[in-house]
Image (tube, rainbow, N blue to C red; front, side):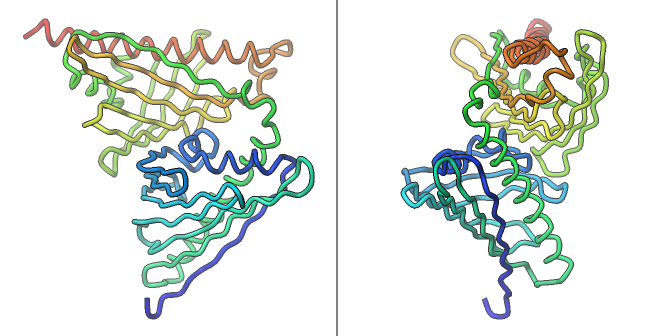
Length: 318
């Protein structure tokens, strides 16, 4: 476009990890919300093994943003090129390349290139885009380094699980209970405070105080993306409890011919350095895994049971 100015940025990090491990973390974009702080949710819309189309939600300078991204994967040369297809103002276009280079046995260099344009090219908007790109990129690279360098332990640090209930009631009522999280302090015993804003329909930002089994209160902050027609609410804790480096999850309301299944799914990355401080000097990762599974599962089950009661009570009153 005439008169537009392309702004370019380059960031690199050295890693004590094999190039193949690093590339694998970048290629699996669906898991980015679990691994990278800025990413809230990623939906893979298309993938043929090379070309990929993603819908992405992420935070940028404290705002939740969403866009479509087209990526071209090249595992042979360990390159991934990307292009945002509907960038949000003030960003007009955003393109880039991930480059993974091997540096001897068990070592590599990761480079992330960006080039972007800004609507009107106003100085304040350019500064906003540069700050968001720099902040998110530094966060991503730092987390890729941390994860890649601990990859032999990654299976111990990551855990995923789910809980479910069957409901003899309308799926719409179950979804409504889960969607109206602002009402949870009056409905769910372990939720003592919840502040929620929804400036963009379907994107909820919330801060919640939760009382644990030992009586202590944990404060978490989350972003939720709601898909009412699909009966799904996905979320990312942007400020998780001390024992977790990351926590993502999903509520799914699944109707069938006999009723409704409601599923609560969690994925967690444990913060190994926090285990002893939270659970005691003798605690190990195995105990931390059990603790997190029991604590999150207990709260999820309470919420699921209350959603079930809400929907089934409404049916009995008709």
